[in-house]
Length: 446
Ligand code: SF4
Ligand code: SF4
Image (cartoon, rainbow, N blue to C red; front, side):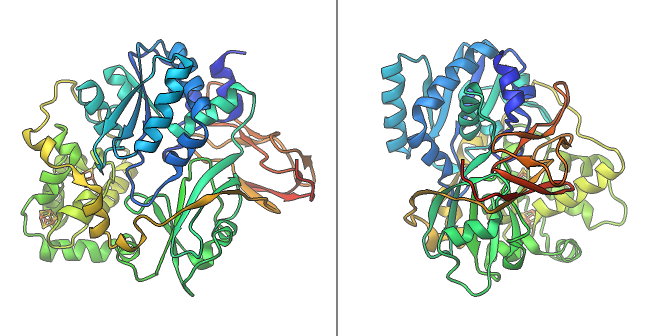
């Protein structure tokens, strides 16, 4: 079977966050195939763990994908500070006689942003609202590569490695079935050291936040890579939860138009016409200039403007999120810009050192937390969302009462559709089919 068909069958989606269906993404011809192993969000260790534990699989899969997309250059982008992982991958590359090269990046945020990475590697900025393909590249996260290797072996995506860190008794790496509850993952790390807490799913900059009492109802998806437990009144938690009305009121009264948010914005620095200070000025006016507001559509929500840049503690990122929603409601979408971009001169000097960012985030007490070796979790029940990715949800192909086996397809998309198949991650009986398929274990571990 062709590799793209295997990837489609296995339901592989981008493991780095957005969850773009991989069989669609890799249906292309490019000069560069880039593997994102940078993991620039603070406190995350999952990609590093995967590289140390699945190095051979990564190199084998990258070689195969390189043939598929016709890439002349196969490049793994990794932080230069990750010397153990670099040494490990280099040794495998040499032993296997692979043509893959490593590209080392500084320890800054957002080194893992696809647009920054592509620019650093090939020297061309991606156009506004564009994708790496526009400049002859395609990028996959290192976690996706391991899933592609499994797909080559006809194994679907039914497991995830996760970092569980922050205020937990034993910060740890876990391998879990997709659909396990967040609560079970926190318990696997010994539970929280706090009586009440919030959980960031993903990184502190771009992740989403849930409360401790919601942990049972939230389930791990294919692209989740970490859970970080923090006090409910932690700066990061309060910042993410600020209501938009309050944010807009604060903007009206406190924005001093210093434009630091614009000058530090890496999309602006890459030459895009995204000027958050202008959006902040506009949001405070009764008549909005739609041309300015449309710039918000270019925002990737990295959070630099609100966590690092703004001296007044304002939230251009959350304003952009709000403006984007309003524009989408009106059917306004981002338009692809020109390839002819002028990268701003200050670009090289405005990369944010990770340590300083962690300090700004008030996360230093968790920096360098020792992470226990991974343990495999067994779930008694899983709830597997039919939509874990960009695009169309999968259509359920099982009903309540059906017995299913681990790896069996339970939700399907057509081959040409933007979406991904989903599979049972445990053996058991289907107990619910809604927007999630719930499976109760039959007690047999296969
Ligand atoms: S969140 Fe702020 S810094 Fe990041 S891309 Fe958007 S406007 Fe720029
Ligand atoms: S950095 Fe803050 S105060 Fe300065 S222009 Fe941007 S939002 Fe306004």
